[in-house]
Length: 148
Image (cartoon, rainbow, N blue to C red; front, side):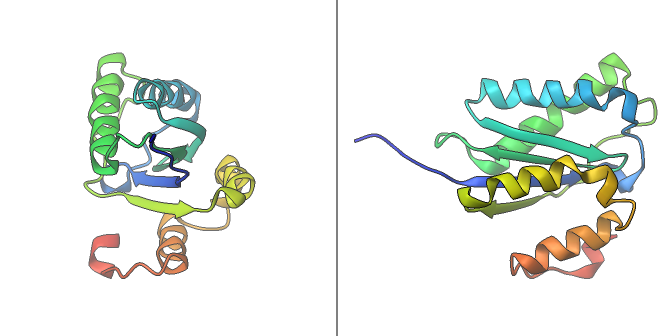
C-alpha cells in the first residue's frame, strides 16, 4: 500500500527581531529560492508571499518530510543565500520559532488568496495582530512574552 496525505500548511515566520529587512525588490528572488527548496523536497508549493518582516508559505508536505526539519532547512539555506548574494542588506537572520497551521484542502483557494494579498492586509494589521489571530483561530495556546 502507498502513503496518501492531503495536509495543507500555512507556514509563517519572521525576520530576527521582526526587523523590516525583506525589501520588496528582492523578495521575488527569495520566493523562487524557497520554491526550489520545496521542489527538491517533493513538497507542493501553492503560494509564497510576505512583507518586510515576515513570510507566509502555503504548501503540502511530502509524507517523508518532517515539518520541523523543513523549516530548519528553509531558514538555514535562505540565510546563506541572502548573505552570499547580498539581496537584503540589513538581514541578520530569522526568528527562532515559526507558526504552522493546517487547513482542509477545501480552504486552499481562500488561503492562497489571503497569502497573495499580504501587502494590502498589512496596511490594516500588524504582524503581531495577524499572528495572534491565527493562533486563536487554530486554538493554539501561547505565551505573550514569546510574541515580542
